Image (cartoon, rainbow, N blue to C red):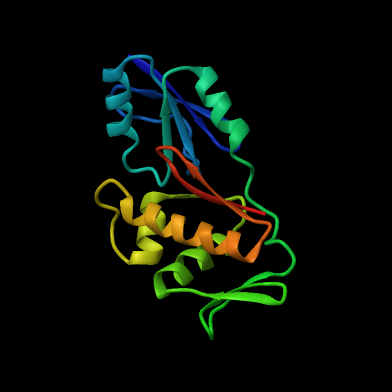
Length: 170
């Protein structure tokens, strides 16, 4: 059985059942397409060492995902900043206090707007350990930070990319 693996940006490689990839570049995001549940499980095992991967059933699902994910880059909206000395989120002349966890979480997101942070990478950066479980700790933090952004009226959004991670956009 052969799977198709697409790596961002525009690099494609074939992955055989034996696990060998024909291209040696390190992917920033690998997208695997397998139509059957067994094929998707096998892809998950083969791609488990990748920093970030997404497994979908059809090429259309992959295209749909790629339409949602903006390329990394850009800068935070003017007027939005995380004050690490006082641990507050500032939007122009308004500010709101952050917990240590919210501060570390936002510091990661705001530093790289548009980047999709995998749950595993966020867990390692913010919590300092490997991601274990369903991610309810991350989702709880996202909820609290979204509420604080809304309270400030900030022009920024945190998107959950289902099954992959979190993305901050301005």
